[in-house]
Length: 113
Length: 121
Image (cartoon, rainbow over all chains, first blue to last red; front, side):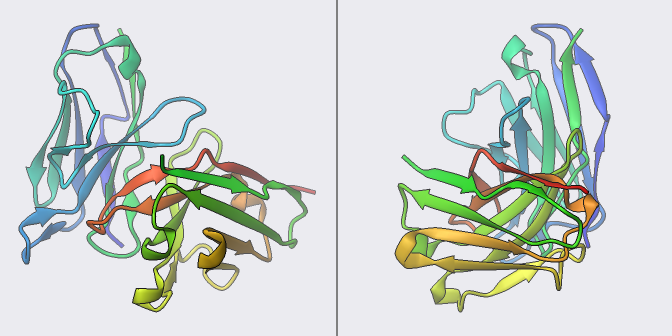
């Protein structure tokens, strides 16, 4: 199974500042046939299901604010929130579906400093 | 509007069985793969398994932790997927979400609100 490792486990950032979350996969999730990374980012707020933020490593889902961006390729990925808002407090998960079973990172808890 | 609604959760004793349902609306259910993901209280997300569409032979796959105990099925005439859970263990206690695999085949674009399964004596 592909192991997804996120860092840090928790993060406190001031409002308006940048937040960066990293995700590393134990093997490449880049599909050579279409040159797409099968890496997804989700946001989960307390008591809610996960919400799709970013897919194919860098494509923002419709309706997601443009302060959220994803980057990376192969095995190393980053989710960046350019200017933290209060409503961004949540746990963020990366996930790969390059191969079955799909696997998630352990999550990164983002809080306001 | 796409909706996924889980039901069937509850309290069950270790070794018992439970069947969860996932009722879908707002999209062509028969053409979509449906996955189940669970989350123990205060923990991360764990993929449980999936069932593909008829066009993909209703193929199923399961996490190692549930293989042989859980079975996923679907009734496209009712726009509903099911998670049949047998030989339940205390470590199966979690909120169970059903989710739709997006058309790209690599991410989950819609999730239900989840149903809580508690395995305890």
